Image (tube, rainbow, N blue to C red; front, side, top):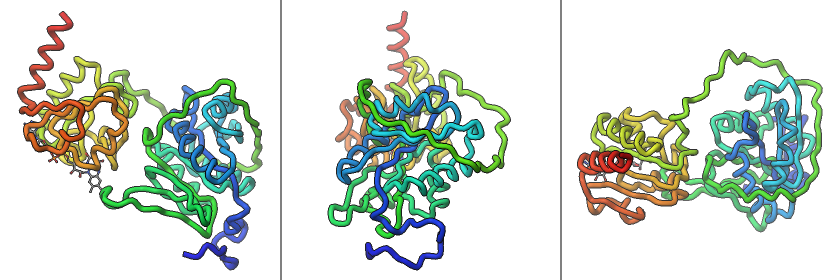
Length: 350
Ligand code: FAD
């Protein structure tokens, strides 16, 4: 592909996205919930830092919503050089087409070279809406980012078709380049309370009306901690043989206060829901302990646990690939090991 900007684009004549040299800065979209800026969106400051230093440009945090200005300093403390805030009551309810429209309006004004969005539930929806509104490309679920030293295009890197290859994707003729990465693919940068930066308050005249209305919100019960936030995970695979195997894992997990997760094959068998799938097409987790039971250790699964501190594998095949990557291995039938573990924990609690 040529890096020469095309001059005759009719796709979006009102928006000059092709003079790529006019675009600068790396944006990170901050997702805000009742606890502040979500950790996954702050994690995106880590690749933003790498790219901004390679492009010799700034990291700009973007806060769009209602009552969000109070989080701008936190964004800076984690690494943003400046923060653009659009704090508006009309944005009190998240709606992808409204948020995308406002982010796109700001992007047209400030012309960021890159926009990073965390691939959370919201981000997975918002990213393509933003890209479509700007007629820009988007690369989802990146595992790394880099810069083409010659052209200064950002390389959006992700494994296609089963993690055997790595694709380096760029959009040399259009800006901004948009990339998402799943939670926990990047580490949270250190927080520095002494960091300062500029906070730019923005206003917007027109905000479209929501197409949907929030009827109710329900918080997950405390014992259903999302696996990406769990410190202890007991995870099962096809080797469990049936859904009863998962019942045994759940019993162990409840004794350990652990979350239960599974491999894709376990999900495909209908033994565990997709939101508990670990791996390339599931979630990345970063527990202190990951207990893998009846999981062979395919690359796509192991991708999701590369941030786990200690991996313990239980597998009845001594040649299972997981043993070459686990910290501790138990070669045995899980039906013998798990009940013994449950018994042991119970006796320790007495
Ligand atoms: P298997 O590979 O069938 O392994 C079962 C294991 O259980 C075996 O090692 C066996 O020895 C052991 N076992 C059997 N009986 C017992 C017993 N009684 N006690 C103890 N051990 C026992 N996979 C994911 O997990 N997550 C992903 O996100 C993911 N994404 C993918 C994306 C793509 C594009 C592709 C192509 C594949 C993806 N996969 C993913 C699938 C992946 O390649 C593997 O097929 C899958 O991880 C295997 O699941 P498993 O380990 O549960 O099953």
